[in-house]
Amino acid sequence: MSISRSLSMIVPIVVGTALVTGCSPANENPSPNPPETSTAISQPADSQPPTSQPAISPVIAPVTVPVSELAGSQQNLVESQVLNIVVPAADLDAYSPESTPDFLAFRQGYDDGSARFNPGFSATAPGQGEVTLEGPQTITFTVTVEQ
Image (cartoon, rainbow, N blue to C red; front, side, top):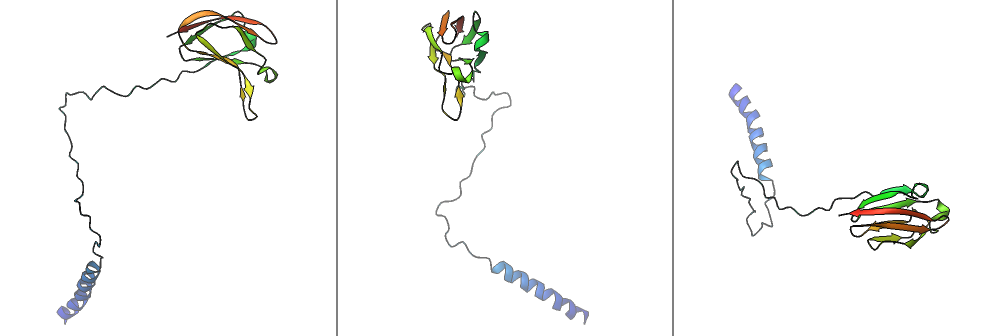
């Protein structure tokens, strides 16, 4: 009796497992191409990885100077760097260059309603020269741009 009792417990487990396994759906849309495989390329332990990487331009922080500290100062920039001149909100568009070396590009300050943009200069090439700004006060300073 114990053998038949054991069989009566084992048979439903085996049949249930077979039914569950047999009920899994077949792949109805098999891929016509075999799956892609990758092969690892090994390098000798003493080899160096390739050194040619794309050139990444460094981020150059602007030089920010309050207009009250600019007169008579020496400003040192590198090519592509910006000199940001902090002015009172009422004077954003009040300053304009009277004389500017050809290696600097002036940008006028403005307020677009959502943000204030101070006046300033962008260094476009190496050089050294004197800058005079006209506005509520006349300001003269020297700029040196290195490569």
